[in-house]
Amino acid sequence: MEAAGSVRLDKWLWAVRLYKTRSVAAEACRGGHVTIGGATVKPSREVRIGETIASKHETLTRTTRVLALTGRRVGAPAAKQFAEDLTPPEEYARRAERNLQPVPLRPKGAGRPTKKERRVMERFL
Image (tube, rainbow, N blue to C red):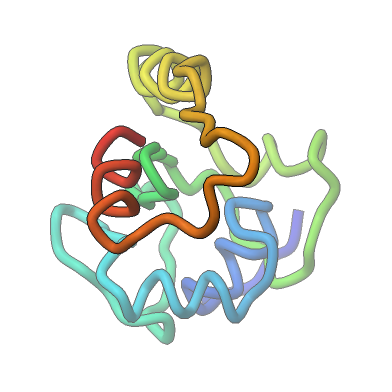
């Protein structure tokens, strides 16, 4: 574990593998998808040990507790030393349920969908 005094939020989120790249983590912070204590935060905010971070990925809201600080990307098994997953199992079940929904098929040769058909498909998904 690194004995860093402070680490930027976007860097920590990337280092513990909650986001694939640091720029995606920073964009999620700027977009209001990452909260600490119920308040949206900037990517430059310093992370402290013991804080609970909620980050929204598509349909899943992951809740994570900071166990230690690191500014270097770690492997998936080692990430458990830096972050504790507090996400309720219902969140994962809801995500899996959504992935099991059937995909609407268009008949071959029907051409591009119209704007109205696209809206219906998006509502369905």
